[in-house]
Length: 325
Ligand code: PEP
Ligand code: MG
Image (cartoon, rainbow, N blue to C red; front, side, top):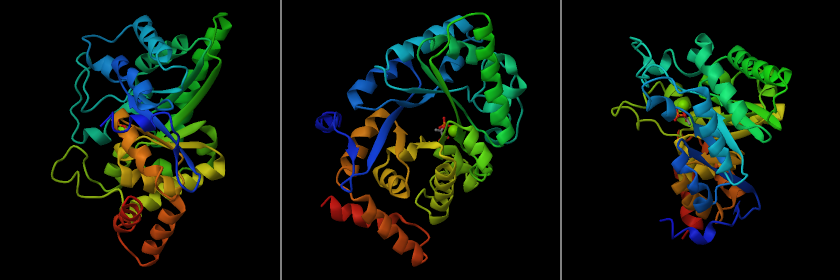
């Protein structure tokens, strides 16, 4: 498949209507970085940091992590990298963390909730990121923010470490941007002040979908039962798009749906301009976007909505089939 799309690698994901969509890749290992070049991704829109914690028998040392994050930036060809802080707890139990007996781990003590309660680990990770990005730009994203106060507290932690470094006369990153993942319906409806406080936000569609439909993403019986193309879910996405537009906040989408052509075109037609996906999906998604008029997709979607369709999948696939014939 990679050779099939190789000719598209250096071409933009520009739709027939002229709209440019930025295609980024998701990563989680050093070994993923070479894909940046191979796929033509414009940057790493989501660097998941769990693996380095899961594969060790003790908490990694700050210098060890700083070295690793620094090599990630070194290998990103000067393209932006968004580091997501640790999304751990509940089901992803660290070997050296006391297991929590929680009935609903996905809704339990995880991600930023752990980070703010056990500040040592998040603090160490933030310091490692700051040191890794000295003299270079740094982008940090906090996972599973369900309430604006969590973002404010996490951002304040990062800022205090930056101030501490500055006070000690240490060199700093050239620019620091701080964002939040939109993974719970609650934060999608947060007041404008939240979106204004974020330099950027990224929709984590995997979790957002599971909580919107109340359908466990790990449960085979229900995980494929509800579709991203469901009209209600797409209204939620539009809600987030409009809040970001009002606040002037940069928005991306980094769940698995970003790498599925029908879903990717739909998100683009709704107004999302940056998609982050596994590297192998970049070619296929770019190939479809380049052959599509997003305005035509939008018109078909609006008509289907007016007709009261519960899913916009038939409308969008209709336009795609016509265009790709
Ligand atoms: C998501 O929830 O969509 C996401 C990108 O994060 P993860 O898949 O790591 O939970
Ligand atoms: Mg998630």
